[in-house]
Image (cartoon, rainbow, N blue to C red; front, side):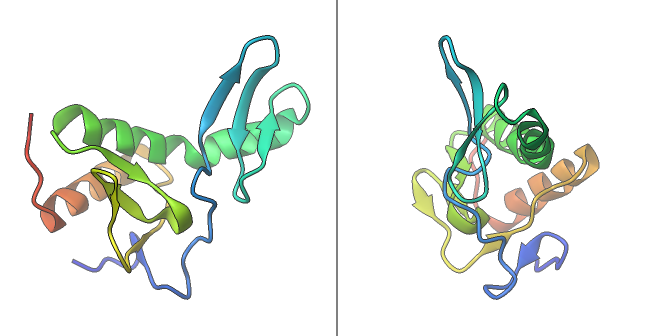
Length: 120
């Protein structure tokens, strides 16, 4: 399946840092989120940008959580929003970001249909 809403060409990939969207807590300093370029954004220093990034990546986080909870494989997203399964990047495939919960279910189904996935 090659849904243009979900899959992006190399030319149209998101160009995200491998840690983009990661949420980090530092005792005494609060929460940080990694932006598109790999820079940590602190909620106390730049709350507006922190909230923008949190909103941007929230549904990708839900997708990863849903995939990891129901299956034996370990899922994540890496550089340019490429899918990583069990520590191995799926080559030459670039994914868009889901922007609502309905899309999380669409991406989930697409990934399960495309890859051989073992349920827990």
